[in-house]
Image 1 (spheres, rainbow, N blue to C red):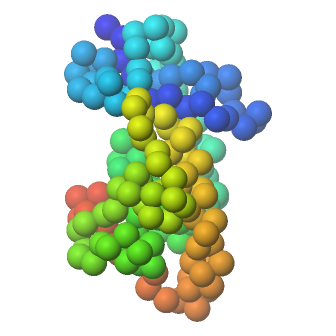
Image 2 (cartoon, helix red, strand yellow):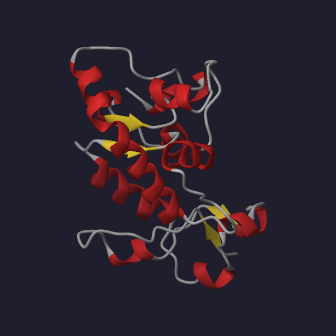
Length: 171
């Protein structure tokens, strides 16, 4: 049975070639949102195993600052623990949350809403595209990067809490 986690399309030259294709983890027949992910059985032929990709991603992330949106979800799927201080999460950064009207802990603005609010850009219209999400996330982060880093440098509490069940992926 073919399986997949997601497409990784925009890869730096230093990554192994299979990162531009797909990786395995979830049986495709159980991957409920096929219309959202855009994955097909053709995408999955010859895909490396989850374990192969997981170890390569973990090696790639070591000693790196990771920028993302709701990273706790991605880290949980990868079963990867990452240093909290090396994370820049647009879904958790207070000023971005406030701009999107999110005031309660435990609630997180969607990337789609944040891209519209911060960038004036519509994303995720049709099939899900991880590259589009990554670009939107980076563009959002760049609008607040100086503020984010300055607040971290003086020890400000800059991010909201994440779901308790997912905190184990940070240390």
